[in-house]
Amino acid sequence: MAIGKVEICGVNTSTLPLLSSEEKDALFQRIQTGDEEARRKYIEGNLRLVLSIIKRFSSANENVDDLFQIGCIGLIKAIDHFDASLNVKFSTYAVPMIIGEIKRFLRDNASSIRVSRSLKDTAYKALHAKEQLTKRNQKEPTIEEISGEIGISKEDIAYAMDSIQSPMSLYEPVYTDGGDALYVMDQISDKKNKEETWVEHLSLSEAIKKLNPREHEIIRLRFFEGKTQMEVADMVGISQAQVSRLEKNALQIMRTYLSA
Image (cartoon, helix red, strand yellow):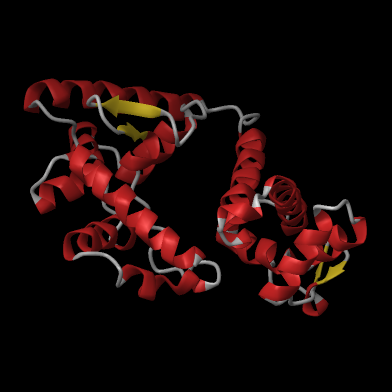
């Protein structure tokens, strides 16, 4: 996947404009009055954001031009739905929309691929072993434990399990204790991107300084060490629901700082 090339979809990426915050604000005010020329300039001024995001999908076996076009669709949707009165940076709002559009494209393309019989067999063996280990040990097993139980590498198990899963929203609730719900995204660890620099850095190190020691530790474990909320709860010595509430509060503090 050659992202380093200059021409993407006929666009010379080396000549893409760089807009200041003041220029973006002025253009967005014009967009709200129906100014199509301002809308075009605003889109062009944010194409570098799309380019920075599609680099995160460098391992996907997709043409970079296709990903760029899909990312641009996400960008346009973000522009059309952005509410400047929320005091949130446009990039903060647009990034998840662009990523979501690309992920939907990759998911829909992958869904047409037939899952092989051997993959299904591996997945079903892993599911059976998971059930047996859970009953035996009274807790959900790790992928390493499942691997040891059935003698199949954890990489092959993960790939097989992923191949038979139906798409699920990251915001689908999986548990509630009568207070804040825990969502699918709360159960997922993200080790792949923990060393990557986020778009525009978002003054992240300064935002983290606004947290108290416990909130700082939870954010570090969750987003820099790639731990799940359950793992963090065990390490910190509190419940998963408490971790969820502290995490949400910490993210809100950081979001408020970053949008100031």
